Image (cartoon, rainbow, N blue to C red; front, top):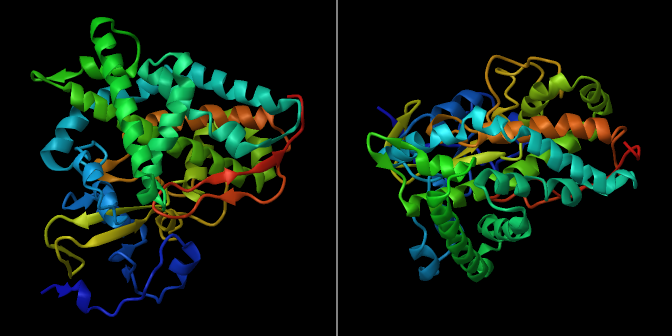
Length: 399
């Protein structure tokens, strides 16, 4: 008979701290946290993420953040980021072909053009705030190109992306009016773009999504608007922060940076290892949709479970020498978990991988002898995506 989780004598775990995780008493695989419980070993992380009874908590962020604004809550519709069951299966089936590696690959030349242009702006000086000069502006042109939005709207999209992503800020309650106003502007813009693509198809994601159909089922206009929002939310902050985390890591391992410049074919391995060693998405959360028994423990419906992705990526039972950063080594047979696992495995992972694979070798070649030039200011390690807010660097100029 399963033991109710509430009856267990468990250590308290604040989360997202690999050192604290390894310091927990031997034999413990479960801990309490501020919202409910936490797991951090690789097999438990995968076990929770692949169990469809544990639902994505993304849709309950307003509740967790204490938001009671009725107007804001009333407009929170279904998103592929938080949908479950048949709804999620249908949306995923319809949109998955548009997010294929092949679709991402067609943008690779443009990715190189964007990142090279950003380096051009700082190359002569030999110094930059890598977070604001390179990371912040990198994903927006690519998202615009992906959606088929014109270059003249890049700055508009950049503002919208920043404002919509305030939903993940710790002071979100004070920014609800800004978020709702931005959502309305983006909604109106997207509907115009959809109408244009219905009459004038192009070689872009929106056209692909409009064209996708299976057994007579197609995305509605409302669903297309939702997908554009999901692309902006899911594809902007993740990439810019992961690039910042990766380069900060490389700056502390100059021999790896030089190696990547000389051997750009290591890009794929460099991306996976940097995401494993220092992922921007350090954790995720699920809640029990029904009573769930796992490892002879009963978790009642409604129980929140934090899944430590960063900690799982450093599990010594899965990864060889997990504390060592090495882009040449095969650390184990299991994938890094920064993209998640299970039905909510990152839909845009092919695009994110392509963006990072194109950026890192080019940066290593054009910003040789990269060094941190002072303290990095990190974003709050709260509910959002972690990364540098400011990261001053110096490098050999003129490349």
